[in-house]
Image (tube, rainbow, N blue to C red):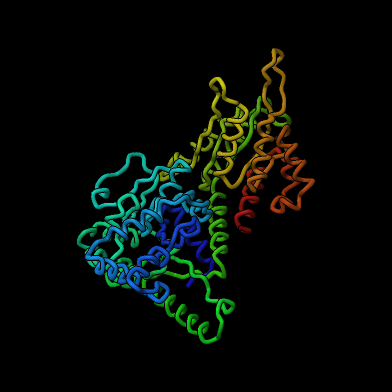
Length: 476
């Protein structure tokens, strides 16, 4: 068993290392309006005189129906089509799991929620439904979705009756082999899964025998058995003992249960993981035609050195390529990347130059607002510095950068952690002053206000920013 804190720590580590994976069961789709197995087979059970609520072996139940109908699965196929082509609702858990940098998704579900959710956020899914799919990779894919029991698009081939399960390792052996490899090399979160699937039980048992005690840790959620859901003590105590035994048995496969009091707690834990992971991503917001109280050389040294240090510390830097700031952020980041043998540019630097060409009929201000929202949504921390531009009039005077203030408003709306370098002046000072008036909302900045407001020494400023970031991470 694992505490939520232990799970979050280990899963975040797997995310950072690129080793996180998801195994989704029917419970993940149910909150979007789809049925679970019992609900899927309810009418089928009634057609052969059974009560699905009294049946525990639903694979056998589907087989009974198939036998009684002269080995005709058309009704089962029709039921899958009817249930898994319905309109779906928003699913926060699914949104989080597909927005995190997870590249491997396994599911026994027939619906298309995972691949559609990936596609909605412009992540290209490579969906594997048949063994022939495994031999072909989608170019430019961002994630692989293994649908080991089939897909609503080909319901006649769905794995649902006993015959399908018994033949699985002959007809879909490559799925079993791939899953075995992933379970050995990746850290899985099993979500919405009951652990009653015979395929998974077989694969897990083989891995346990092959690896002995050298298994990788995996995690799952269990809703704690609670007295308020039972009419008598006897049934409550029975299910409590059964849940404990099941949790202990899963540890044979290194699957650690995370107990929650309600399903909304799962969403809260996933949101915390998402927020913590995004703290690795920092957006440096700023533009400067002039540098105020800084000499040009001192300002450039500060911007360059800050970006270099953050990348050296393995933070991923995003730049909007603001004039007088963006090029220094890029150069500093590149120096940080190339200062290590194993760092890669794409892993630690994101360039988001604002689109300049706008077609007739397009609203540039609206487009830029959406662009800013997209940038800030993907990060956890925003650092503000300077914030002045040259206006477009003939006199070419200097004015405050309204876009930078908009980025601050977006950051507040998205609950991002902000660090304004007030000593750089201009919009950054305005943001600093606003935060100072509501400092209780920004507790992580309280001990750093004096440095942020006045300090111009590069070494001292960077030291303070690192201290603030550490405080943020320690409190999440």
